[in-house]
Image 1 (cartoon, rainbow, N blue to C red):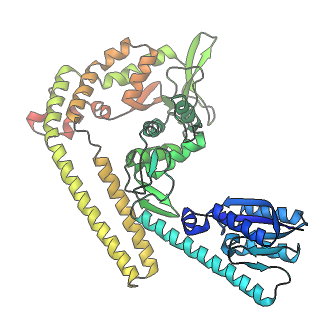
Image 2 (image 1 turned 180 degrees about the vertical axis):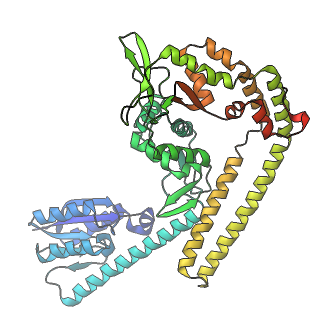
Amino acid sequence: MQELALLYVRVSSKEQEKEGYSLDAQEKLGYKYAFRNNFKIVKCWKVSESAWRKQRKVFNLMVDYAKKHSEIEHIIFDVTDRMTRNDFDKLKIYTLIKEYDKTIHFSRTNKRFNKNSNSDDEFMFDIEVAVAKKMSNDISRKAKMGLREKAEQGFYPSLAPIGYKNNSTTHSIYIDEEKVPYIKRVFSLMATGSYSLRMLADKLYSQGFRSRNGMRVKKCGIGLILKNPIYYGAFRWNGGFYQGNHTPIVSKGLFDQVQSVMNGKFRPSIQKNNFAFNNLIICGICNCKILGERKKNKYTYYHCTFSKGRHNGIGYIREEKLAVMFEKPIKNITIDEELAAWLIRDIKERTKGTLKLEKNRILSLKTQYKKISNRLSMLYDAKFDKEIDEGIFVQKEKDYKTQLIEIKSEIDNSNEINPNCYEDAQKILELSKRLYSLYIRANYEEKTKILKFVASNYTLLNASLYPTYRKPFDILAKGPDRITMRGRRDSNSRPPA
């Protein structure tokens, strides 16, 4: 009569399959062993999982199955390291042997082990498990060293985050052209301070942004994207911080701006009633928002949210009056024809040398980057030759890497210089001549677009609005005299009176 047996075959890597340890090869050898010993295999587990983990799901299922079926007396493995490479699973096997009277078989070596085995057999069994464990530890250590070396060289040693793809040939990451517009958009929108994570998740989902498996990217996923330095060219891995050699998607400046917004107390609100001037104004007394509210289903008033408690000083302002109050900030940056013509001539003269100066600055940064890289290389040599204290090495390594990341970021940002800055400046100045008239003729929705274009926010205090102008409107707001102070102080450089 045939005795009943279980068969467990395992592989953890493609390399092992090439070495003759494929699942099919182990299964075939296991069935041949069972046939020779007159065993009937009632259940077989074929699994791809590492044997050094503390939690092996399929292995544990096999152990539980063996415990529940007392009629099964035998368990067949290929060799010892296919069974276990850690002490936790070795104890489970000992429990099956000592308490459940199971016999362990190894089909490749024709060895067996049960509770009747002598002390020498048990000793050899322990040694084989220990050797398997050491081999696993060595493989793990070498793999970690290889990944760290890869990270040191600027290669991201893991699955590329959304917005990038892995190149299996070069072992590097490259930009995912389909996803990168969404990544740029999510950073740009968050930097405005007008969106929460949930609002961004909803907006990008409606525009077609999906994860790799086609699912919605939730607000927690958006948060992870916005906090990941990989998008400006650096990356974190295994407790370290490294400068990558991949192409950045956003600038370091934009990334830092987003971190400032996310670390602040700003909490954007959803405009349920689509009030035109919501998310534009803050209270000058308490820094809370000024939001719209409908009264009698007819009139729209704006007032402080009083999130930090009620106060005197700012009452309710009708939407029509608020629209008029915005005229002054717009008028302050609307320039006449004569000043515009002078500014265009001045910008043209200044632009001539700007690109050349920037080119020299980049060359200087690259020289500095090479110098720090050489110092870092010498530091590694000193550690290898044991000429430097470990504590000093760790601190110096951290300092050099930080410097390299900062210099690389400056170089990347410099590459974003607009070669058409003169033409763009002309367009801005042409627009500035017509800003006030455009605002007067615009409807509320168009007025809001103009207001957001010229300033990041407006502070309401003592019935007056104080804008935080964006560049270059902050310069125009200072007037001709202040503009002159920024330029050369000769008579030819001054704007007309």
